[in-house]
Length: 108
Image (cartoon, rainbow, N blue to C red; front, side):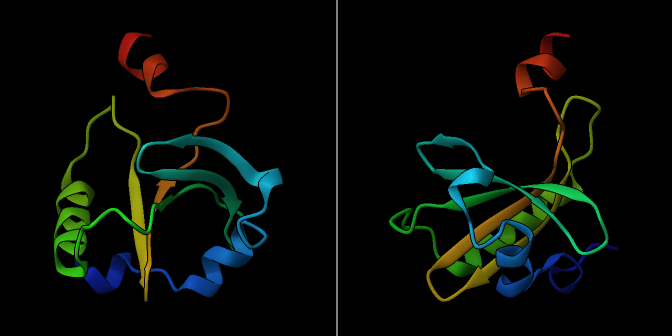
């Protein structure tokens, strides 16, 4: 069973994994925020989407969306590993897929 507690990462862990969101770890940017590559203490590579602070989405709505995304599993979807919410920070943590984009998984 997936719960909010089982998916929640603390901000310190994410900052350490991304070397404090360093520009060297930046791998993309879009309308909703910046994406960084990181490595967890376990050695697992992750993609960290740091949402823009002005997104307007509340904490409850964000957590509910995370729970829904975590339950979705499909071979064409990158797996959501968890989230971090701390004051103004809203962060999504995904599995990192080296040298590929979503287009690769959708269109082969």
